[in-house]
Amino acid sequence: KQEVTQIPAALSVPEGENLVLNCSFTDSAIYNLQWFRQDPGKGLTSLLLIQSSQREQTSGRLNASLDKSSGRSTLYIAASQPGDSATYLCAVLMTTDSWGKLQFGAGTQVVVTP
Amino acid sequence: DAGVIQSPRHEVTEMGQEVTLRCKPISGHDYLFWYRQTMMRGLELLIYFNNNVPIDDSGMPEDRFSAKMPNASFSTLKIQPSEPRDSAVYFCASTPQGSLGTGELFFGEGSRLTVL
Image (cartoon, rainbow over all chains, first blue to last red):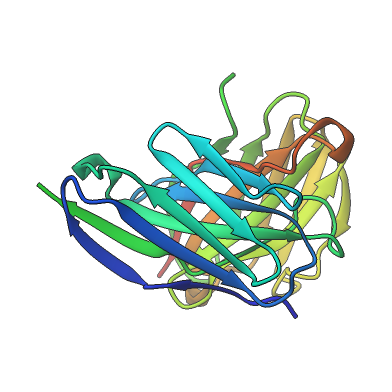
């Protein structure tokens, strides 16, 4: 059974510092891994999606890496801003599961202080 | 594109009442998912549809929960009778079918349900 873990559960950094968020999974038979952002009282916004054949994806200040063999993904956010404060969740789609049936981590709550 | 649209955004009801949550997926998306989010259990998949047909409802907690998708642009999640432990945020999400998409899920803003 796949387990998705995100450590730490919460993180506070001063503005301008780089953020490093970790996601680990126990079963490497993934189809893809997706990073989401969730603001309080809001839905989930997709940030980056990495296919199992890819090593990383980049979008602006965001970079996500994937190491399937070690069961890890890392989301880097460069030069953090107060607007980056949110909960970040990772989710995996297993090759053995039906299309779109994601398994989520519990999330990392990020606070960027001015 | 308007994105996934859910209603109501907030619902407060009393135990025993029927609750109906609604979702309009993104046009052209063949898959529709209902997720539930609680502090204790995080995000859990309840049920999903492909081309309006329920494919996997193993996540539906009890017979009190039911979901329908009468057409490609509308789905409902019904709880009858509701109980306080059903209090959660219910999310709807959609995605195009595998050959046309990357597996990226698009979520609605959620319906926050409070059962007193």
